[in-house]
Image (cartoon, rainbow, N blue to C red):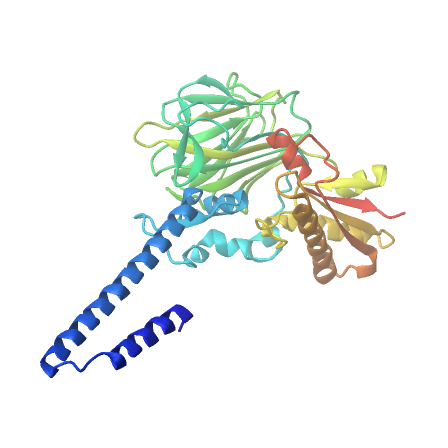
Length: 429
């Protein structure tokens, strides 16, 4: 009991003792009034407490981002922004605290690299971002400034707490520009969402549809076909994927000259050695949606590929990779890191005299001290994984956190910040 409450109690008791005797008939009425006053006081305090709780909730929610429980990507981006995340059910009610953990995507994210379906996953993103488009800085209702419109109707929309590019007219065409023609090795990633019965997105690396150019076709949910690759001398190849109407998935393309692989989530659906195309300075997206059943795109990432890690390391003594992923604000390795970690492990096994410093790097978002600490934890996580999973001797590997101290590109663009979020391998002579 607090001191103020004790004082009130003893004051009432003393008054009761010193007061003249009260007739029995009046005592009952007084006790009733005391009980009523006590009840009113308790109610007042409860209301004040409730009001303070509501005020606090409102304050917390002012900068909050609301995500539907099934939209794990929205939750991850919200957490990365540092803002409060409010997770709701489809009807808008606040979901249980752990409800999002039951989704397939979240379950996959909790796997270690090399586990489950990721065991045979071999997509490695290019180490130099050429263009990133997440529409975070674009105006709702506008066409994204970083892309180029050709015809049809694309517009940025807000849906379930995330920014998407909506194609809601027939024959929607846009270009993803590149400063120079595509390099020999390049990668493309984007998320696609649509409904049963609407069309697909065709990807033309040649930048044009003229002359039956080779292309890749990704479908949201169309007769079970996930992707189709056409080449002048290769015919057509179709493979069923795990796409579902109304559920977003990540489409990926990895090209090395005419050798092209394509993926739906963690599944490789095309492995084509003779994809014949001309490398242009623009990649054409041809997406066929409509007003009733629009098609949605987000997180478009085009990057330049590179040589094998060991070749680059042998030439310059240092190599950067964009293929090691961590959970937001954490040192937990994500399963998408499988191919890069596997390549590093194999390189160390094949070259037993090779010793490495593993450097963690960040962009300049957030506090410098926190970034340096996190980068060191992440470098240590990579080192530990190589030791425990690939059997590499611990004394061959040193983990160092560099944080934002040595950017490899300007932090003024999304591409630059992405390039700075990296793990570098440095050969110890």
